[in-house]
Amino acid sequence: MLIALVVVAVIFGAGAQRIAGMGFGLVSSPFLVLLLGPFDGILVINACALVMAALVLARVWRHVEWRRYVLLVVPALIGVLPGSWLAATLPGPILSVSIGVLLILGLIASLVASRFNVTVTGVVPAVVAGLTSGAMNSAAAVGGPAIGIYAVLTRWHQRPFAATLQPYFFTVGFTSLATKLWFSGESVTSLLAWWEWLTILTALLVGLTVGDRLSKRISHDAARTAVIVIAFGGAIVTIIHGLLA
Image 1 (tube, rainbow, N blue to C red):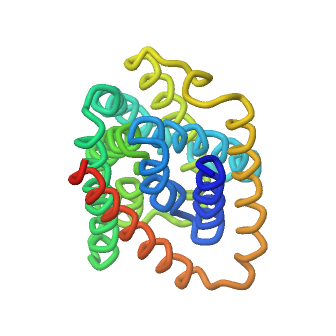
Image 2: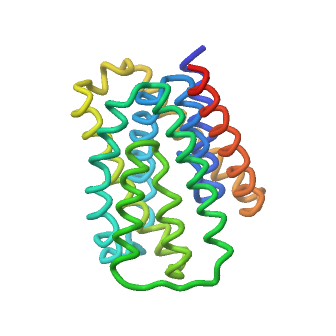
């Protein structure tokens, strides 16, 4: 039953990512935190995001802006370290509450940023966005909102933005996964059995396939709204669960 619920969460997250262009971590992380615990749940999200980024990167390679990738990924890798340390050392209930709060803050920041007609340039905004995204990705698997805000404020066009996110999240996801395992002293196989990892990978592919088909029938705005509503609900449940624990 547990792995079946994990599969459902992964399918929904992957489908949301394919339809709305965002939402895998936002949708899946609160539910995987409840099912697997705050540390294991976020680690599974990092692993899935890593695989998903690799699959998409093969299709959008030629649109990647590598200079912008470097500007973002270098500070992000620095931010991953404190995020991984916190994820590996904080008590479970405190980590659950922290993940829920980070989810809500990230969602609110994304919504607010889209309302402002402001344009920023230079290296400093990229460094701030990368540091924030790397730390939040490692601690709570929600590195997307910080990069999304940066994209809005710099008027980054959608196609190169979406393409550049793939090597970015592949690199940050791999580093988040590796550093958390190192800080905790655990291994991937000690968290889940090989067949459970294979089942989750299959669910990821199913979610992407279903999302690909539904994306032709569901509008981007409707999908994005659904992602935000589900993510808010999941974050609130995660906070309540952590407080009760």
